[in-house]
Length: 286
Image 1 (tube, rainbow, N blue to C red):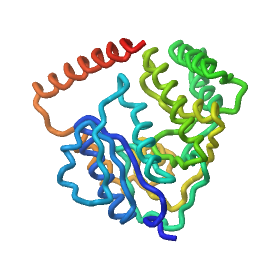
Image 2 (cartoon, rainbow, N blue to C red):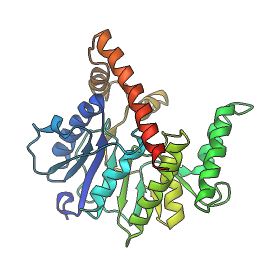
Image 3 (cartoon, rainbow, N blue to C red):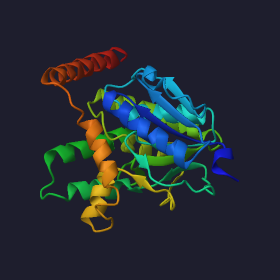
Image 4 (cartoon, rainbow, N blue to C red):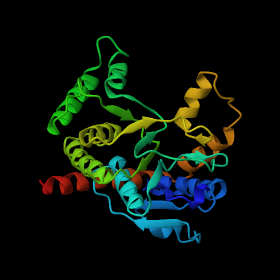
């Protein structure tokens, strides 16, 4: 069965000028390397994509619910699963570099390109310095408290840390809805305590709480570019620095697009105002 004939789609969330420009490249990649496969985009400015006429690209406006945008990806996933059996979430700055195999299949639950035991991940961060940095210890204690809020023990229960840049979510008889509901609760709890980033903790805890299975899969045959991962590969001698040089250059050009000093100042002020506004707005609900 061909990939494009399956009950499957790509999805992502993109907010802000930089990410809206970056995601346009990802959309083009998916159209080129997985033609006919639907692509769902949630964005703060759908009008920026009015030039995309492909019926397989479904664009939805989204108003930020959190203080920052890291947990907003759950809304893209929820939208995708309301229409398709499986969705592959891709960060907006990822690139697809070659044809997607047409024999892909996914088990119910989460299939992660990169994941590990959550305690192994946390211990790895804590052990980088001796003694551990105080900020990391405080962060660890917060995530232990977050686990307790939903009846889990971070140090004893089997909980998986999912690197959120690329993973697949597949329906599992309604557990996917329970998973998203738990993620919602955890996202709000984290945001209210100024932990706006790192949704991987909420993903792992939510999945463990409702018994939503997580499996690791190298996803052999899916050739992708992520600048952070590629830098690690190059440093370890696992990748030729020239192989994906073009992708680095394109991303750098978008991220460092020419702006006047005035524009940069306005952008920074706007960002700070938005942070204050969304922080107050979120707290007003509780």
